[in-house]
Length: 288
Image (tube, rainbow, N blue to C red; front, top):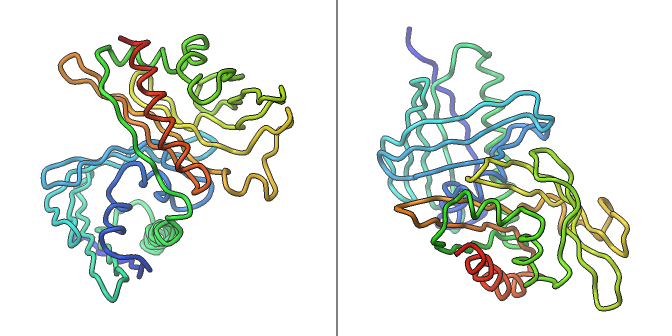
């Protein structure tokens, strides 16, 4: 029986180089790859080259159900086409066409046999629409990337990142009184706090979006702490709510690579660009 092909599309008000990066980089995929607000992608791996593989862990926000969306790229031509085979043997083709500083994306995929064709088209189009919204808004908030090689195991680095005493030490670069209240279990609420020069407590209200031991941590910021009060709605948190802070650990021949991808609004960009490299050097010195 021949498979049914379904096509979804969008015109993105952004140049093709930008669209390609936002579509293919893992740090961005976790922001837009969901069909409805009660779903999310908590973790993504992507190797956008011919023969490379990809994985997106998609799950309900309440954690009740989830699955890995996986496959292998059969053809990748930068800024032009992506073709891949899902692990359930369905083919997908995505094309990118530049038109007057805009980008037209067409995505054609073979339907699966469990759900109605209309439902599948609606879901994939919703994801495409999320990507359009994310790509067109990107710039007011952008993902900053930092990385460092550390001569230590991923296990040691992971523990140093989150253990209370060592956390206070390496994050002292940001605030000498830095500490947290809560735990690092997936789904848990956690407060990242410190005191200012006047002795007032401030910081972030967050939750642990994902935690893969020795491999990956994703923190989703929900609001701020101001003068000891938690604020999660209103104009004061509009620039913070939903921003992610992701830590990825990889190991090769005894050397570990720690990658940090952090969402930043324009107000804090220069501060993060200055302080994050210092914090990573501090962490490296503790681990080695």
